[in-house]
Length: 532
Image 1 (cartoon, one colour):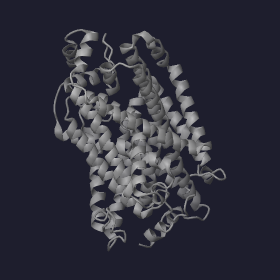
Image 2 (image 1 turned 60 degrees about the vertical axis):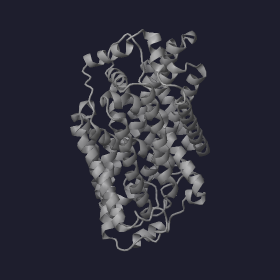
Image 3 (image 1 turned 90 degrees about the horizontal axis):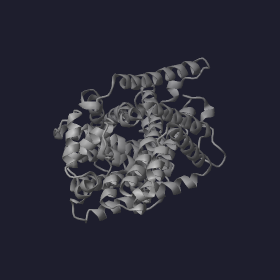
Image 4 (image 1 turned 180 degrees about the horizontal axis):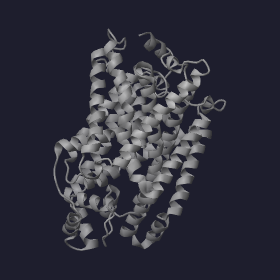
């Protein structure tokens, strides 16, 4: 209790100064900006149908919501204990095990930076050229196909990716106000996109098949489904597996939203959970629900599965298609203005994602520097700013490394299997939440809030156990999922190697400080100075 009170006294949350409604709206919109239509669209229209043929989307969406709710409650409870950046790192090292806590944090931060680099490659190598290809198909008069071909070259991908990372690095370092403005712009564009989806749902369904057959000829749907079957597609329905898949996706979606909040308002993790806890979940559900309803209203599950299956396997076919809702929407309503809007939306959201991950990972690295786990110079901040310069530079290097790995063809491993690394990194803080809550007696003084049923010791234990079960289930699924969702031996080894490297780094720093008469392990059990 003394530790809890000591850390809570250091809390000075920026979000607490705003009204509840303002905080709800801000947090919800920023989650949408971090998730981005690129990720939501790609998952729900390409990867899930292609790797989980004809799965139950409603069950999948339910899994995402339930999983996100568990993560929101777990992080909300931890924020009541720890009022500093990197609440999961602090929770694990202060209330459980310093070496295991740092190893988990190490896996999460490195994987997050590499994931951001993989997203850069996915965007410039596939998603942005794909938008131009879709535009060339429905608007051939503008000659967009040549531009799409130019964007797909490795040299152009590397150039644009490097420039985007450099631009984001400079924005975060020298223009923090610009970072906030760009995040709000991204959130606004996503809201407009959601409004467009809702608007087009008012039109009669069935237009897609008619337009699609007018381009490719009659029977194109059956032809492409049969082509996918010839490449090994087996249409099955597994509701339980779809639910488990959705819970795994909640790591991917909701954790990204939490990262966005830390990039917008420094100190979002401090204290109040009323705003950033519930509105992000509501926003996430609305966005994904609109995507699911639009797809189910206009396309059959078999065609989506066929498109996703063929696209992910890069199967040779004469008929071009992109398994994205924006492609299907452009086919139904061909418009140059709509295409330009999508290009602007996706480009801004890429910068949103990069600045969120650069800032968030750099802040945690700076906390490591404060604790002595990395050289203290890594926590250096420019006067008058709250940006750790060296830590930010190190994070940018990691993102560039992820981009380089992605250029060599491994971008899907960095992007698709990111939830497995997050599950590994969450084990220690969730265990800390369970053990600390189990030992604690009484009830929180904040029991008059809407969160009151979960901030009791029993509620904390139950939420922590639910999070542990979900994380372990995701890791179990890494070796039991069918098809390519099952993690490869090499990638599993890479995640284990990251975790072991984190342990090795911790013991190395422990020995380094021991030779200088300083007990690093004992220090990590004390209240840290507030990181400013």
